[in-house]
Structure formats: structure tokens, C-alpha cells
Length: 186
Image (spheres, helix red, strand yellow):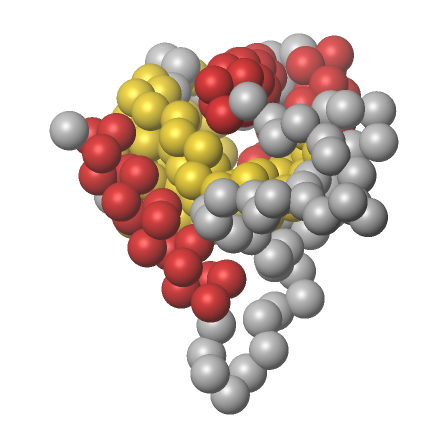
């Protein structure tokens, strides 16, 4: 049921974000994404094979699970922090904030105390060209960041059923890159 809720919320937000207002243009940071099936090419158009949706779904799920693991490990290991940075563009402000929090913890020798995030569902909502929109449903446990003396520097409350809408782009090398993330609610 959670996956269906996140899918419905994702489709709704995708429609609102990408549909825009009647009198306004779509924001420049959002790709034009359509869930409509591709049209049949004419004789003058190339006949490429449409991407297999099962393969894209599996690829996005593996990509996001790797990113989530690196996000968690980046508070403890510099190599994970460096690798995590390869998963998102500067345009993803929430990704950048999380990265900076982990970087601060590592630089200052802080201790991160938390269980890993429980990812409940990862659903591809739309694909068009190199743009992919996907929704994630997660249970985020409480976390603490402590300084070397044990004092709490930062505290994060538990968040259940956190729904986030991600936009990613396929890069020339075939990898995915998160370009934005928007929390839909919990």
C-alpha cells in the first residue's frame, strides 16, 4: 500500500511540477517529462528501441540504494563522502546540505549515531529522453552527531513514511545524476 501511495503522490506532483500554470512557463530546472507512450516514427525518423521500463526501474532502484548507502557511510568514511558526491549535481540543494553535514562531521571528528534508513519503495514515475523522475518512500531513524567530548552537535528526529520526489539525468557515460530532490511529506 505504501508503494501505491508514493506512486500516486509522485504522479500527482510530477503533473503539477511539469504541467505548470497556464500562464507561466515551466521552471528551467525541471526537465520536460511525459508519461505518454512514444509515437511511431516516420520514415524520416530514426527507429530507436524504447528503453525497457523493467530495466530502468531496476537501474534506478540500484542507483538509489547505492546513493542511500553512501549517504549513511559518508558520516564515517571520507572515501564514501567522495563517492557520494558523484551521485548529485550542485542543483540538488538538499543533497548538497546532506553532503555538507557529513563533511563537517568528518572534518571535525564528530561521531554519527544512527541506524540506516529503511527504504520502503523506489518507483520510477516518468522517463523522457535522459530525464528520469522517481519517488522514494523511506523510514528515517533518529540520529545524533556528537563532538569528541560526547556533546550533541546536531540532532535529527525520526521521520516515518518520508516521501521524496527525485529528478535525475542520464549522463553521457550512461550513469545517473540526481539534479533535484523535493520532500513531498511524511
